[in-house]
Image 1 (cartoon, rainbow, N blue to C red):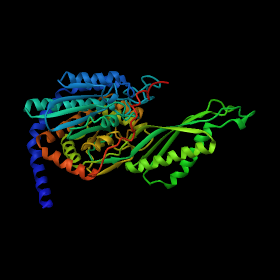
Image 2 (image 1 turned 60 degrees about the horizontal axis):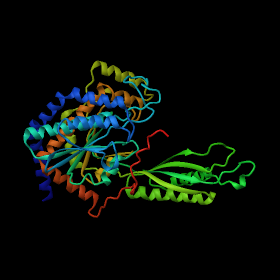
Image 3 (image 1 turned 180 degrees about the horizontal axis):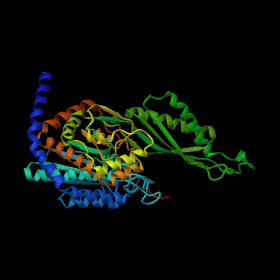
Image 4 (image 1 turned 135 degrees about the horizontal axis):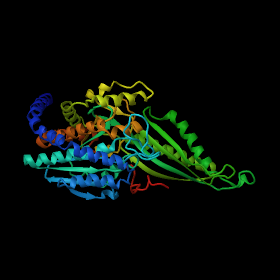
Length: 477
């Protein structure tokens, strides 16, 4: 019986894709018509290059764009001044779309294929979030226009999520219950290739370990001192031994942020920041507890004290193949990015400076084969994916082979190559939205898969506990 149902569903999908092509052309034409407007918004946010939780101008640009199209804007949601929810329509289904817009520090760069900062040491859109936020907003507007034209019922919710780069704003949005009532979430991320495969990733906990000791003259009265730096180093030594006894895919990173002011003074304060990652939430919780024990042991052995602060905690992605395959089919229809001769020359010049063999430039035109994948990094979309069936995709907004979080990525995000990939992403998301609005069976199937993978006894608990969003983590000290 299950085989028959699955076969019928596949046959229905084939029929549905053909039936909906006409409707999808409406949103494609809408996005092509307004491409220059969206390009200007993406360029505006690229110019602002605002860091996490400080994106006042960037969030205003997106909010103004959506408000002008009739969206109701709820500002400063979940205790974050630059977060917002833009809503249009009424009734079911409710489709959520995620938007990001924060930049990264120290990666200022002009839109050129060789290194040339706009401001030395300044900020830059090194992950393409100027494209991310704009494409997501564009897809929401295109869906809104289609709902009006087709006289269909349903709701579009655009979530403006700041501070993805370290602030994990989506965790606080999830914790605040802002996803309640949403049937499916679609999103994307700038990339060097076109890919809509279902993926999972690493769960993560990040935090600070602050050690407190007693200062003293390091030569004249060392016996009176208790070194906070010794506490940090004792902890680090034990954690490094622990690496031999953790799951193979786990990752532990740390950096000593403060270790004293002068070598002839016993440091009475030191701090170290840790990030712990693992493919499963329970494993990352277990690893974090072991790191905390190492900190406590380090403090005990050096007669110092330690305080632990969890800064961020993110779930791994819960893949939803029902939604992912929908996006994949739409991505195949949209296709990849085709370069002009000028863009190809830009790409070749950029690849010359990579220092490694880059993929063929023609890869920007290709759509990667669908497969269930694993991405060895982390994203705060993870928490969203455990509350609502979620799917994401990537489009070629950067020259193939471009490293993430690099000045090269900044350059691509501020010129035509990035804008072409951006509008392709908007088209795929809007087309997927039409599939969900026109055929609720896709949502039903996505929810069934979601519940089966999540488990009936699952209860969401944020890994950051009850802490407030770290609104000042990017502010200059």
